[in-house]
Image (cartoon, rainbow, N blue to C red; front, top):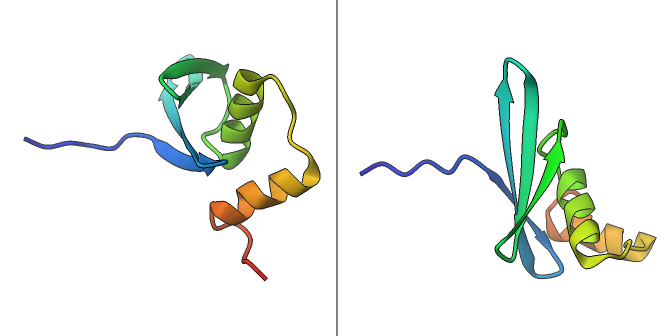
Amino acid sequence: MIYVKNYLTFQVFGQEVNIISDETDCGRNTVAELQGQYYYLGDEPPTIASAIFAWQELNKREMDDKELHQVFRDNGFIEAR
């Protein structure tokens, strides 16, 4: 049996956010999965920004600059100092 991981996973405050994206003739469809909930993002690229947006929407709050910095660091986009 062959398993294919066809999504990106990002860590946001210890929670996995899976971003599933598919290109079709009609455009891109992107969905975020977080804690068993799915959030349709529409025509968004599968990026860390999409994961952050989904987390904020599902948690009904925006991250401050310090929190955003930590998420980027946790996902290897910024080196720890």
